[in-house]
Amino acid sequence: MKERNIPLVMLVLEALSRRLPLNYPKYQQVLEELGRRQAGYKGEVSLDYFLRLLPMDKYTILHDLNLPDGDYNCQIDTLLLTEEFALIIEVKNMAGRLIFDTENEQFMQVNNEKEKGYPYPIAQAERHREHLEKLMAEYKFPAVTILYLVVISNGYSSYVITGKNSHKVKALVCKADVLLKRISSIQNQYSKPILNAKEIRKLSRLLIKLNTIPTNYIFKKYQINKTDVLTGVFCPTCNHVPLIRMKKKWYCTSCNIYSKDAHVTALKDYFLLIDLKITNQQFRVFVHLDSIDTAGRMLRSENNLKANGTKKMRVYIPVNFP
Image (tube, rainbow, N blue to C red; front, side, top):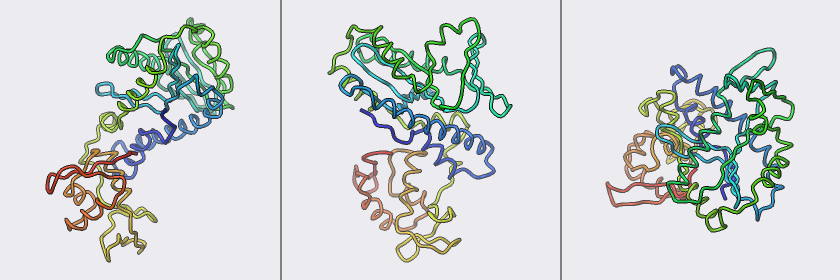
């Protein structure tokens, strides 16, 4: 129902990595999270090898859900829906030795003799389950059992579960190559249908509709203001900013190339970081254009934009985004 694309949070971080000054206080932290997200995405993609073997008539699959949760973002890597249960899959693509400390609720990675701590995946998955339960109750869906698994997608890593609650967590963690076996075991435990096919379709459409670009969450997390974002059109060849408008094209004063459509990436960055609608004036300010007519032609020529309103009140909204 929702195919796997580059995660929205990753697109936001990529746009930020382009549009924050290199000396920005949180720039390095943004880059580090982007690196982790990119590794995580590779792990999620590798999981598709196993998920494709699930019977399509039995499982509805939704990837990369970003559900607003107050000032936070409930980001679910993969959600499986069946008539009997729902299963949240949180993917960890990490190298080395992974330690789940159940007594202190800690998660650590030991790699190249270096130990590093990360948020506890079990607590994270539990919060996601609670949020999904509240959401389903709010929209009057039957109370289907919602389960979760933390899946280690790196085939060369190992993991250990320690502490007095290790027996409880053991059933919640697995490597990717035994995921289907775990799903089959869950299916055997939950055989009573709770949701019918119509309710599953309705729930899937709702979750897709609620899916939101996590811009505000990322900005609050790193204390970034929208005024901190660099404006202008980037050069597609050398990344210089801003390009200038010359001979009906974008011209780079750094590498002397011309581009006809370099503003398209700037538009995507605007929708990811600023707002999901844009006016002629806002577009001109963001890409450094003076001409109202030129800006209007550019916006009208974009097939993925629809216009609402007239004259100064006209706004342009992406039809499909990202």
